[in-house]
Image 1 (cartoon, one colour):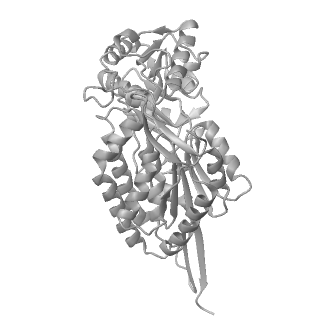
Image 2: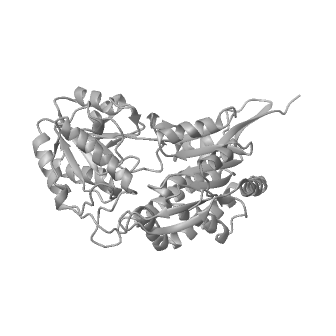
Image 3: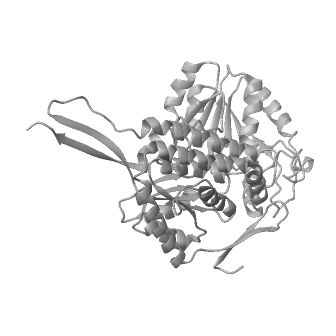
Length: 464
């Protein structure tokens, strides 16, 4: 492979599944000019018509759901039994935002004032650049793509080199569903190409999902230009199991929250604090359920734990586990009970660690893999202190039968979303946002439209 192309290697078997040339400066220029022309016309289309056309766009994507799911599995290694869920989530989010646009994008009407007509409109920004990751390639990008179109913007999508087929599917769906040519485009770019795209004066906003380091680079690329961005970055999402929690429900959902997609989830559960009165029973059941997971080829129906995206990502997690054990942690799951490929292999057994503390990297640094540390706590206050002892703040879950306690504790936890008795899920009617190193900005909900539009005030004197 040369530096002017990308190659996608499947973690399933190391086979090359996609090869594409990278867009060169002239192609980027042409794409942006097409987007500019398409957006100028699209901004004049009524909201109702935008909603109709966006619905047809979603219909087209959903019609391909089996193909999209298989492509996800082949590109990133997620079990095929789970990949269709991403397309269902895409549809839920997109259709919710289409519905919410009827309210969120209407003019704001202040109180009547004699002799004046006053209102505020929500105007499109222009061209929106979406730089999307591989782990949930459709879910992370649809959060911005459909709302951007509804608001009257054009969109240019750049996906990870691990999932280039996803942005291509968006562009094809846009054309086949009848959206204007140039309104949704895909570009395959290297880092320099992304920086050039974001630095172009025609790009009015950037939506990035990825690492903290990547967020820094996006910020640098936008420096000196007065444009906005949303950044969804790292996470080390905690869970707190209170003494009044439903134990069976908490165990079942937290095991899934920790190991779904091989732990490669933006809001996956990476650390759990359990009230000391439940700790031993919780730990026993958690480990018992974890041992039932089936690691293997994700195309096989019985597999519910696939390989990580690449061998070096799995080795990073292996090293975190090794260092924690050397510092006194106890690993409760024997990798020999799984098809663990060992060093260099993306196939990594799930691991549960006890006797952990916050001096260990596995409890403070993002793992993004199938490992979780579990600690006992004596009180709500201790749990909140440990949950907040992190550079990140994307989601946190509280497991309790006391809603008032969940709200009280949730107000103290430094996070973008507080869950009670669930985890690892985005409700598209709620704002998706993070604090600290988990990023800035907001997508989804009626609030999500605000960053994709600008307010324009009309102050009209009607009586002279």
